[in-house]
Each structure stands twice: as structure tokens, then as C-alpha cells.
Length: 307
Image (cartoon, rainbow, N blue to C red; front, side, top):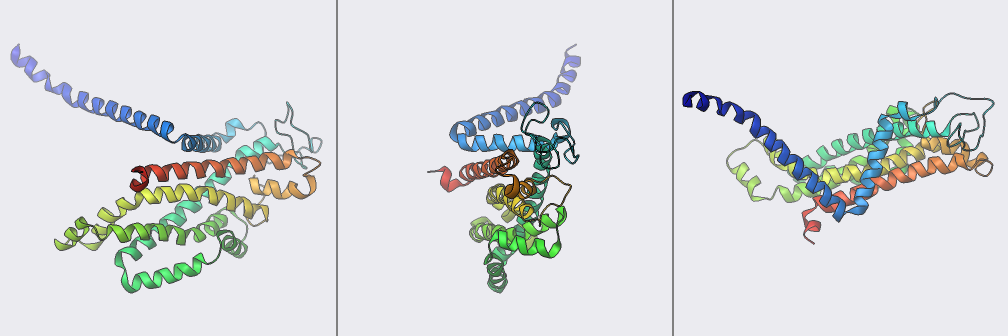
């Protein structure tokens, strides 16, 4: 009996140990989340706004009450009420449903352009900072020329050249973000490449690619995450500006900026809900991403964390 019990006991350990480890990780994550809410209430508020935006974009089919592109000739410029919660526009389209679907468009363009610009700019800044010398000098002068133009102006030029479309809007907004991402990652790389463990890796003959992607790149992810989160708000605002000027998302896609461009001049006084609700959606989204980006910067930056 003793031999049989000794043989059966170890078989329970492989399942018990991972479950205990998962439980510890879950508790640690909950403690860190609680500490973040206590120390950064504004950042937590921004995170909740961002979470609400993401859930709205994901569940647009279930949250919308009408087809966002369907027109109702007899329901034009209806004020907010039971049938149309936020009213209708000049074509009889439901404002609430268009704002809900507009969250999906804004989030898709913001995420796509931010990730594309941050990844390309991050790779440029990583190699520029690590290689240094003439490569760094030429790269930085080229980035200076790109950064000389404001974000919106350069996005306007690119969007006018490419034409109004979702993929063109993503590309037009991502290109101005490249020099900003490259600057941030380069500054981190310049300090990391002088560390003792990088010198030790070079001394024992570790290949350059392995040093860059195994030792340098992981230590730049903190600034990269902060940069991406902060730039998301700017990307959404630029997309709304491009759509407002007719160079962003074309019809029939619902876009917050295009909703403002159609109603701002002609219907601002006659039907103010056409301007108020899309403007509130844009403001809340940018506000939420900015608050979350500032909080993440304080949490992930060791210098600020020690103050």
C-alpha cells in the first residue's frame, strides 16, 4: 500500500503547481491594478474611457439601434427622443448609431496609423541610435526635415496626394508619427548601448542582431508603449480633422469628423445636437488616451517612479 501511494502522489503535483502559479499571478495582477487606481486616479479614468471606446467599437452591431447609413426622408433633423436617442441628421440618419460605428472607424484608423508609425519609427531610431556615426547623422537630418512640418500639415499633404480612403488615411497619419517615434527610441538606445552588459555581449562575440533584438529592444518597450498610447489620441484627432476637411474617411463610412463637417456650418444653430455629440465623442476619446498615456509614463519611467 505504501508503494502504491508513493507512486500516485507525484502525479498530482504537475497540475497543482501550475494552478497555484496562475492564482499567484492573478492576485499579483489584481494588486497592481488596485495600486494603479489608487495612485493614478486620472490615469484610471482615462483607462476606463479607452475601455469604453474599445467595447463600443467591438459591439457596434449590438449597441446601435439603427443602420448608420440608412436615410429616412421623413425623419430629418429630429431632436433627441425615444425613437432616435441623439436625434437625426439632415438625411434622417440616426446620430447615436453613427457615433457608435464611428468609434470603430476612429479606433481602427488610430490604432493602425499609430502602430505603423511607431513600429517603423522605432526600428529607425533603434538602428540609428545603436550604430551611431555617419548612419545616425544622416538619419537624424532626414528626420529633422520630416519633423519640421507639423503633424496635421504633413498628414494633409499625404492625404491630399493619396486621396480619401481608410487605408490612405492610416498611411497619411502614420508617416508624420515616424520621426517622433524614432526620436524617443533613439534616445533610449543611446543610453542602453553604453551599459556594461552590452559591452560584455560585444566582448564575447555575440552577433549584432542578437544584441539589438535580445538586449536593447526589450529595454525600449516602456517608452514605446507610452509613445504609442499618447500618439493614439493625436491620431484620432488628426483623423477627425482630415475627415472634417473631406480628406479622411469617405462616405458612407460614419466618421466623427465628417459628421462635424456636414453639420457644423449649416445646422449648428438649427440642430445643435449634430455638432455637440460628435464633438463630445472626439473630445472624450482624445482626453482618455492622453490621461492614460501620462499615467503609463509615470508608472513605466523609473526616474519618475522614484520621485
